Amino acid sequence: MVETTGIEIIAESERTARPRDLFWPWFAANVSVFGMSYGAYLLGAGISFVQASVVAVIGIVISFLLCGIIAIAGKRGSAPTMVLSRAAFGVHGQKVPGIVSWLTSIGWETMLAISAVLATATVFQALGLASGTAVLVIAAIAIAAIIVIASVLGYHTIMRIQSVLTWATGAMTILFMILTIPHIHWDQVASIPSGTPQQMIGALVMVMTGFGLGWINISADWSRYQKRTASDGAIVFWNTLGGSAAPVILVVFGLLLAGSDPDISAKIAGDPVGTLVTLLPLWALIPFWIVAVLTLVSGAVNGIYSSGLTLLSLGIRVPRPAAAAVDGTILTLGTIWVVFFAQSFIGPFQSFLITLGVPIAAWAGILIADILTRRRDYDEAALFDANGRYGAFDWTSIATMVVLSVIGWGLVVNNYAEDAPWNNWQGYLLEPLGLGTWVADGAYWDGPWAYSNLGVLFALVFGFLITFIARRGTIRRQEAGQA
Image 1 (cartoon, rainbow, N blue to C red):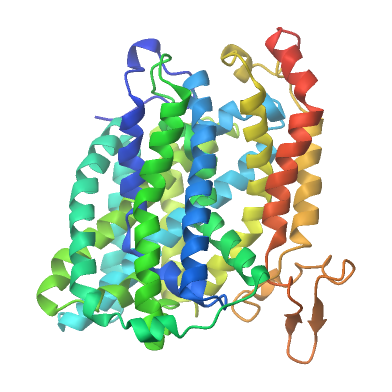
Image 2 (image 1 turned 60 degrees about the horizontal axis):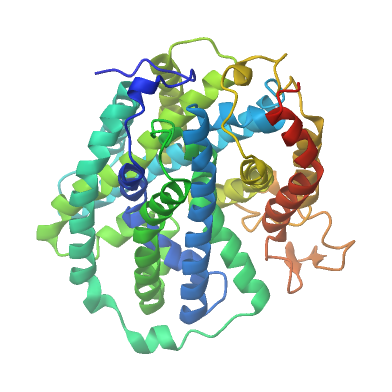
């Protein structure tokens, strides 16, 4: 019932999964109604429905395709993502991106739990059942308990849960779309003015960080049980299909809803899922609320499970279930803080995403280049031996990630200066490079490139290019068995 395997290599006898099995966890974690809320976020970037639809399709598919490439490493090395990343950063050097990865996972799973709690309170209030602090407290405890219990049980339990949730959530999402079609007004959607190419780039970065890049640091965690004979192409395909199929449809439909009613678009910022659920007739609220909460919970379960593995990869010597429980406690405390004390939800979250999105993008570019350059499976024993062929530190990868993060943070700005003032230090390279101007009177950035968040794309692309060129010889020596 409880998976005891931590970050150690998966035994050959347990590697029975097939590439198509990857569809279930990725689809179930991303079929959430929360995806529709990105319709409001994209239109808030100042672009039209057509532009936002193009951005959504491209950003979602490409970001999950990158997840699929990293998932190849899981099959080749039979270990979690952050352990496999030691081949690129060194056994001890991997702790640098490992800490960033752990913070990203903790943030994502907490965000999903918060959305579930807020949706519960909104639905209960709409039904006239109960409201206030008591509902929030009970919802927070119950949702956190479900997430922690499932993540403690581990891989096999989660895979079974996700396969069931996929059918239930898929059916209810289709029902939601049918019931909310009357809220769509094509004339209003079509009248939304177009934005600039720079605004489209900014929206593209937001989509990529909000979907695939938000999961990319755990991609190989779900493919480490794959058979060694599994096709790399099939792993990439099923990973990409499972992750992007639902969000592409949900975001486009969310664009139609948000573009039809400015009030809906405005309320989504405070309670993304709850706002969308209340568009339904009363008879549909309870069943859809249950499914909506479960989809958010399924995503949080994936995050907690993987953040526990990341915690172990940092050198924390506890059993895997205990690591998941530790992260579950942090999730619970974070949920309580935001629900009861924070004044805004989406502002700090989006600001947090962009901030951690820069180093995660740099790490992803480095690891993707490393994976595509290798011709052989990993030396599994060397992943745990600082004296092995991967060494203790790969200073090229570490320096690349650090330098690109520093440059990348200078090319992104805090879109939520009032809600997240702790992030106002970003964007320090925009004025020197002529990409934007800080207007002190209004406390905002001016210029076509100021809000395009070029730092994320810069870190991803140059992380890949630098590694592909600078570390090719190192990778060949590693494959030859030279430390």
